[in-house]
Image (cartoon, rainbow, N blue to C red; front, side, top):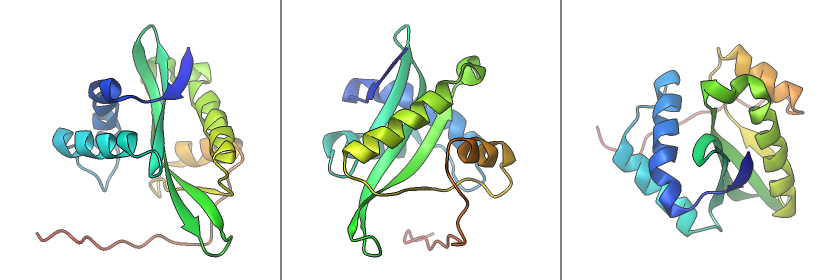
Length: 150
């Protein structure tokens, strides 16, 4: 198994993973064209973020995004972790924990001082996974507004 940053040619396989992920999440709908566009934007602009993938036998079996911004509270660069998914075939093999530990070190090397992520409120499996890997819950509650006309 290999962990590395995604390349443009990885986009079709990453879209397959995102399709699975978005089918599980309440707030998102899978749209291959939008996913391809977003992935290309990140891969082409490393200042925006990095997509980390795990490959096994030339097949991508896990991924996550690290998106970068600045925290005025910390006066430093921070990361937002999005779109983490591990295929069912390798989910019990510790791949998710290995990828997450890699992402934490990767973000430290990019001089990030914090990683923030969101999970569905009722996804207790994900909550326990992130807690097991050193994350703590926040007192902050996310709010959103769509800027796209209906």
